[in-house]
Amino acid sequence: MTSLHEPLALRRGPALRNRLALAPLTNTQSHADGTLSDDEIGWLTARARGGFGLVVTAAAYVQRSGLAWAGQLGVASDDHLPGLTRLADGLRAAGAVSAVQLHHGGIRADAAASGEPAVAPFDDARSGARALTTGEVEQLVADFAAAAARCERAGFDGVQVHGAHGYVLGQFLDVVRNDRTDRYGGDAAGRARVLHEVVEAIRAVTGPDFQVGLRLSVERFGLVRAEAVSLAGDLLASGRLDHLDLSLWQIGKSPEDDPAGPPLVDAFLNLPRHGTSLALSGGVRTAADAQDALDRGGDLVCVGRAAVADHAFAAKALADPAYAGPRFPVTRDHLRAEHVGEAFVTYFAKGWPDLVAD
Image (cartoon, rainbow, N blue to C red; front, top):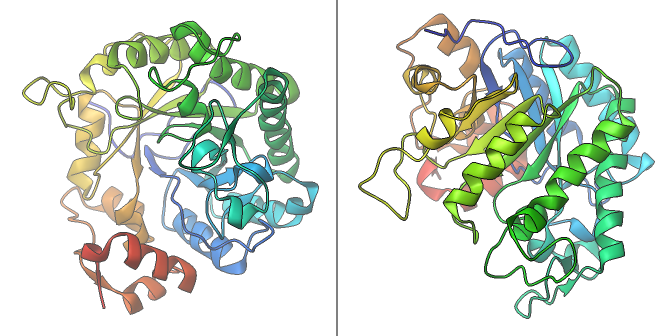
């Protein structure tokens, strides 16, 4: 059985010191121009000091038009480099492997916050987004790659491409709404083409030791489960990814289209990995939850809300298999003491009022 303590050697780059990763978490702590704030750097470096083997930033926009909320981190300009470099240096000094999550909101972008019209794979009356032209999709791919190269220049060990939660790359996978007639629509291969092209483009512009991961939703958001399994298999087999992170909401849950069926994750755990590490995300609150994810067959466990309330979750889980995690609800002062900046305290309390006691 794999232990949480065991180092994890990825296909490329530095090995992780253990099997625990900080999940990418929206925190709204960046400045209006997408540059990092002291609060955001402090929040992330505290988790590195708290023992996580891999620390992944919040979703960072690769085009200004893809900004999805006020306070979002940016990697779309060299103006973002000084803060990114400072963060990369801080995470390395604390012993963590580092990655920036690359993102574009698509129909979920906030035009009021970005100052630019929203664009997406298809026209969307509700958001006002218009469909990207074929040339603009090609530019989107190029901008993901340019952002990855910028992260490498800043000193990060890698990036994670955000293909989950119904943002732009996931929107291409929507079997109902993707009505494109060019090579980025039509059938399953067409809908998935942009994800493969983004990963290939990043590989072409970064060094041989730079790590590339991808986060993938496997149901909801217009996805068909069989297509999600097939896509995950293709990504694992491609040899281009160092890790594939499955965002499951709850690791042991059954599929929404088969609530009495076996756990959704099982279909993915059985796929050949070809040297790609498989990360599992969703509902990890205790050391036992994290170990269970490894016992099921995962290679890496991503921790979200519990890591917000306890910056040293990883160190405590490694020291004590019975560690029960932070007890919710927590107070705002508790979050502040855990190196959570005021903007994040407000966002966390608004988004998950059951987890914060005012």
